[in-house]
Amino acid sequence: MYQNIIIDAINFIKEHLEEDLTVEDIAKHCHFSKYYFNRIFKQEVGESVYAFIKRLKLEGSAMKIITDSDKSITEVSAQYGYSSSNYSAAFRKHYSSSPREYKQYFTESVIKKRQGHYTNLTGKNFDHFDKQMKKTSIEDIKVIYRRFIGDYRNLHNYWERFFDKYGECYGESSIRIEISYDDPVVTSPDRCITDLCITTNKPMNSLYNTKIIKGGSYLIYHFDGPNKEIFGTFQGLMGIWIPRSKLYFDLDDRKIFSIMELTDKDNDHYIFDIYIPYKKSTNSEV
Image 1 (cartoon, one colour):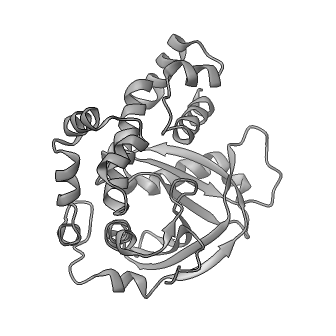
Image 2 (cartoon, rainbow, N blue to C red):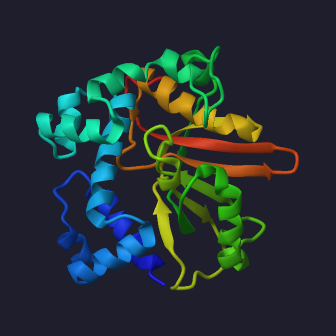
């Protein structure tokens, strides 16, 4: 009932995450009273607006600590509106370690050996990912999308629910796109946010959720393999390749997304291209 309102609210929060957001600001944006909006948000999302904002700030900063080696922890904490002392206390409460300990732990050697969600990446170094990168430039892509909150391992079920609602919009020339906003290392798997999207040549109903995937310069990494290697590939890109790359990434204004080519669940075979946004520079080389 409230799905479109919650999508709008989460988009607003993400766009203004580095600002001093209040529940009143978001409720006003969605044209609700503070108390009523907080109630429906918690009902739909499973946590209060305040808790959601606080969690996203901490998780955003944790991802920045891992992937942006040029920024100090003090700079990262300030970017998300924390003083150094407050940030350290809040970070430790959420992750059971200080920001510095967290940064030291997620070294390349540790990432390569992590289990659980991920394939063991031993033997896959920076050059393994770097040599497969290809540059491209794309136009804006208008899509119909549906947002899901939950474990990425349930993407098959999410796509079924997506097509239950938007199947009539899918045609021969349509492409399927996945935008995953979170890393299960940083965010609890059951709180990860995904947008499933399709392009369509058919008229878009005003009730559909639509948005623009921003065009520009991207790097493409091609994946062709079984399901068990998907999460390890993303972990390798985010934890090994991006931190060591000399490129200027545009991960604040644009998002990493995947264009799906083949999803063969029965034969455990998946083919897709991962698009990573970057800013062109005279010194940028792949």
